[in-house]
Image 1 (cartoon, rainbow, N blue to C red):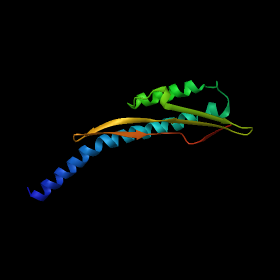
Image 2 (cartoon, rainbow, N blue to C red):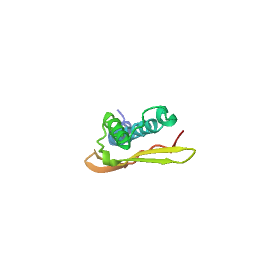
Image 3 (tube, rainbow, N blue to C red):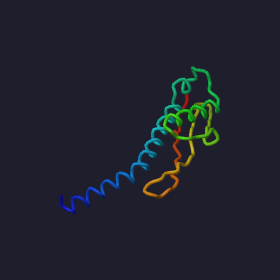
Length: 122
């Protein structure tokens, strides 16, 4: 086999091995952000037709969703903010955490802050 081809395959393999830990960690954070947006935009909350959830209920729901994605998150790392005016109500959810990543003999922390868009509640 040609030496250039072998070198190319080796470089490609190293790039994949190095990128996987970062990519998979980022993907888990993006999935958590999707879940946070879903929680903030739930129909029963937006319309006022369900039982009203407490801030702790939302914190615990975010922690459960994080656990489903393999993210170690504590309730004190979750922010729940509500803003209510005469015509609208806004629910904002966010998480703030770091994940240690090891690749090719190096270790570092990746910081994530997934959050909901400011969701209008009616």
